[in-house]
Length: 157
Image 1: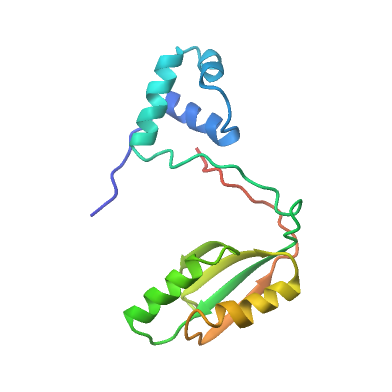
Image 2: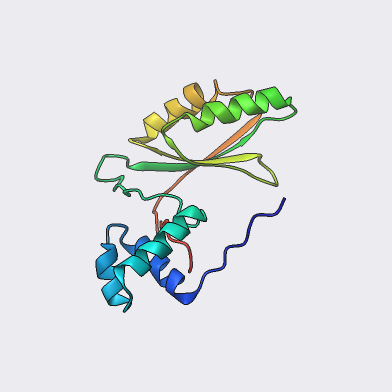
């Protein structure tokens, strides 16, 4: 079944842009900036939540300030396995706190993980001990990030 298309007007888009830029902006301040009443802004925000356009509010942490200096992309192939093995692998990887992104792919590899760790040696341990025990890995390619040029959670509104 296709996903429901949400209709947004320019005011909705403005609200979303502000929310992406600063999720802590008071709705009353935003109302003043947009020449709207606070109840009107709040009503729109509630609708955007109810429609699933705004999924949640979160705080983005500075990984380097917390000592997570190693970022890597890991590509994984499981080979010919049954649905139970695939489900178990997915569940195991989803539970790993080092994994920030976990996606199924088309092409040469079946999965890609973005992981953050404190050091390359911790990455080695993660791949050879933790990930290797998550499922029957047929092929693994690990790419270490040399320089994170752009990282954002913003959508292009």
